[in-house]
Image 1: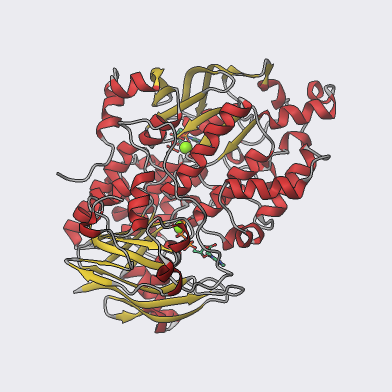
Image 2: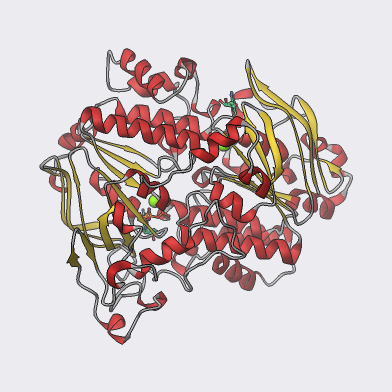
Length: 311
Length: 282
Ligand SMILES: Nc1ncnc2c1ncn2[C@@H]1O[C@H](COP(=O)(O)OP(=O)(O)OP(=O)(O)O)[C@@H](O)[C@H]1O
Ligand SMILES: Nc1ncnc2c1ncn2[C@@H]1O[C@H](COP(=O)(O)OP(=O)(O)OP(=O)(O)O)[C@@H](O)[C@H]1O
Ligand SMILES: [Mg+2]
Ligand SMILES: [Mg+2]
């Protein structure tokens, strides 16, 4: 059973020439951890916010978003609120943007959940914070501490699906490791499904069962975490891996991809990655590639890397 | 270039920073790593003059920056979240103390731009009413009134990989990584002697991140800009810094060249940091 099913999601924003999300297909099973990675501005946050029924002003959408069997895009506002309170929760990229600076942490956690003080205390301890933070205000906490508070807040309603938009970006690696372990425990204990948006490919490989790679509003490639990063098929995935800085080796210059992602104000005729792709042929500029199933993965590329060795 | 000497800062019973010292030479690159809450951001805020240390001093280009704080003391709770206008790069201009005023406008501006910072949450440091282009234009007008602004703006936008659409969009219409790049472009616009990056590249995808790290390496070589990288990403640290400081509970627990510290960590906490780098199972 899937806790999340995104079917052919398209989203248009005002003043753009092409959909900002262009046929996104994605699912998260019960207790499964799925990572969504990809270029900055490719639509990862818009996708995860759409799962909560949060759309930018003036956006129009097509396609389906089903959370635990309910069509989010068709829910009445009251049902949507209920869904957000119980079934699905989200941890945002900017912890400070998601919290009222004038309320104490303790009040923030129990907001809308009368009688949940004990649970709040338990979760604050579970995310590795001292009880004193319950009496503190957001500005008194460091970025990493505040993100732990947000995670505790997200767990207050025992959600079936937890959306994490770069939850560990602001955390040091040891805290990150603790939070990741905490999320794994949550998933084991409650069967929570996790959609994890991240830039960190190593992290994605370490925690996810499956990974989706997004480029310009489309899914370029998806597959099991165990093989996707060792044998990427899409040239974009291979380029991402090549650009990752490593602790062990220092390069004079980091590998980058020449050029920039396509502007939202231009239409796309073929593959979105074609202008920057070392493998592109004229066909790539004219026909958008259809997703092809291979083994347990899917790749949308006319010239995917055979056997998936690195480009 | 930058000299930090014996900084300490407490909030009530929390000793956020304890006797922290380090130096950063012109064209140098220093990494600061450490656990969450270890005092990295507080140190950066003191360097920027956004926070007053209980003890210690910060010297930039031979000028003692603590002078710039003057006698204005804000109530404690507002220190961590200054209002938006104060986070603009020209903030020191509006609250000059006497010693600074005597130095004249040009000198004041030079000091104001000597150190720039890019914070970990750009959402709060960007003015929500201004597009990237407007921010850059205003910044350049203030610091370099005689420059060809349109050309420099185009150059900056290109360097951080922002397109025409993003250049004219308001912050709330941008993705997290795009906002972060606006903040980086704004800091680069004033050509600081020292640029402090507080988890500033963490929210960028690896390609854009690589592009920006390469750009910073070029700047360092070409202009002698010095960098202070506060980051948890040991991959980034190993790529772009020469020296490394490891902080824990407000204190520096280890320091040395980056290569040495990463290859042969002495302190148990540094070893733990290295062991925590996420690696795929098996
Ligand atoms: N409210 C909005 N109005 C108009 N455009 C928007 C809005 N929100 C996002 N966009 C644009 O839509 C695109 C996708 O944004 P999104 O935030 O989903 O990117 P992302 O993949 O999360 O990127 P990042 O990794 O940088 O956070 C970007 O080009 C962004 O500029
Ligand atoms: N205005 C404040 N009032 C009270 N305590 C504060 C204030 N600002 C910071 N602190 C405390 O000082 C300590 C250091 O915080 P700081 O933000 O410098 O940490 P950091 O190393 O940047 O952590 P992170 O990696 O999580 O960003 C923390 O314990 C924090 O709670
Ligand atoms: Mg995002
Ligand atoms: Mg910090």
